[in-house]
Image (cartoon, rainbow, N blue to C red):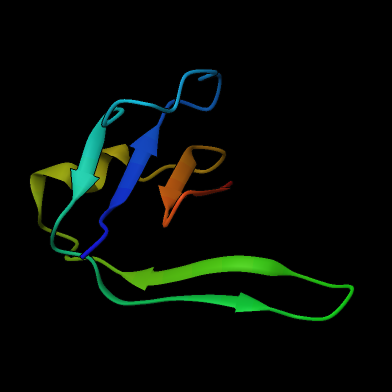
Amino acid sequence: MDYIRIYDRNATDFEGNGKAVLEKASDVHVTREINGDYALNFKYPVRDAKMKHIQMESICRYEGQLFR
C-alpha cells in the first residue's frame, strides 16, 4: 500500500518521506479528467497530530505523482 507523503510547498527533493507520512488517510483516490483536472482526494482525522502538515500549497506525493 502506498501512503500519501506531505512536503513543504518549496520542496524540490521528493525522494524521502517529507514532513509527514499520512498512514491514517482513508478514501484515497485520484481523479483524472480528459484535458482537465488531475486531483488527489482523501479523508484524514482532524484530531491526528499530522493534520498540522496538511496545508494549502503543500505538495503531496502519492503513487509516484505529485499534487498541490
